[in-house]
Length: 113
Image (tube, rainbow, N blue to C red; front, side, top):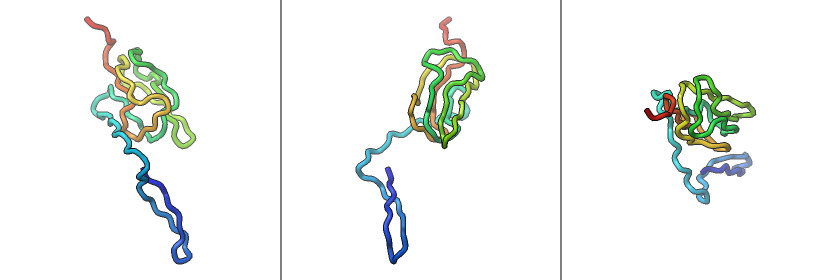
């Protein structure tokens, strides 16, 4: 919601940031609970480039869940626990900040006993 304004003052080029009133306020993003291994957080700010799983998919520890593109590099995000993908919070093309909740993996096999 900010934009940069460039101008000249006393012969010196200047830059300042002002709030862009024409933009709508962005919705607050959910943050991952660091104490819950089933909540997968974005390690860096960037964009979700490729989602490797869908809801209700079974994953094992070490499986690639998604790829985050940041500053001309790709970073794979791996499952930290075995389980079933319960919820995908950030889909393909979503912009995320570090610590944002990407998806939730429910521990276990997801079957009812």
